[in-house]
Image 1 (cartoon, rainbow, N blue to C red):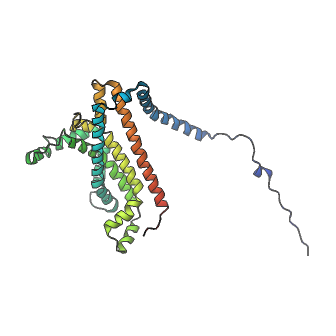
Image 2: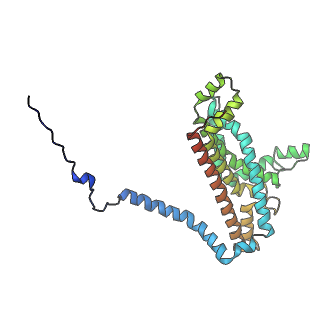
Image 3: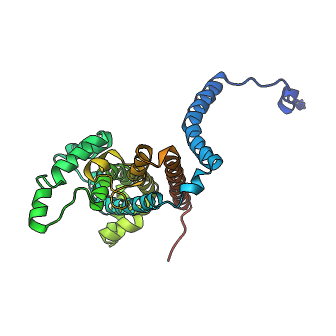
Length: 296
């Protein structure tokens, strides 16, 4: 019987010692990077410009404690907080209804909820004024029956912000609820868990990243609202003058560009801080859902 000894095959040297020739840059990656860099510079340079102008010129310290800045910032934070609370309170059940149930007219309702997001703010202001103003078909009745005037008041600021900002949260929450497997809710129900407890213990945690994203978009839209607010609520310092309206008043009045820059910088810093906070919370919720721990 002949025995053959197989010689070890040597692995080509190029596998261990790759070529030292420089790699060529992928042209596709280069153009993608170039286009992205151009857009990034376009979006960030104006913001960095107003921040640098306020620091170099000393306008931030000069106008930071003026009454118009303090009152506008306080009013914006208060009204947007109320707006966000109302959007969560009434928008969450509506988003869950649209995500889980089928009923006649659902597509029409879904389209109506999208409409405020694409309407010009001036149209939203006119619509609110015609409906809830002193001569509106609901506003006039409220004033006659309850002596309640909504137009050109702080309540009008909240209503204007809610009209344009709530749809952003509803759409995001609806997408989040749709991403949760309905079988998980059914299993929990068969195990005796109440529907409300199933919603808070299963549905909300699994859809939390989408909910937080909706909160961010809704709050940011409410904070930057201008057109509907000035038409339905007016521009009264300390009463209806939010940060965007204060910037407009500074440019038109005695404050000038320097005061407008101060207000803009404050708005940019506050918005960036809140967005960063919510993004961190969303990232933490995603990591927490990917690494579940058993709870007693």
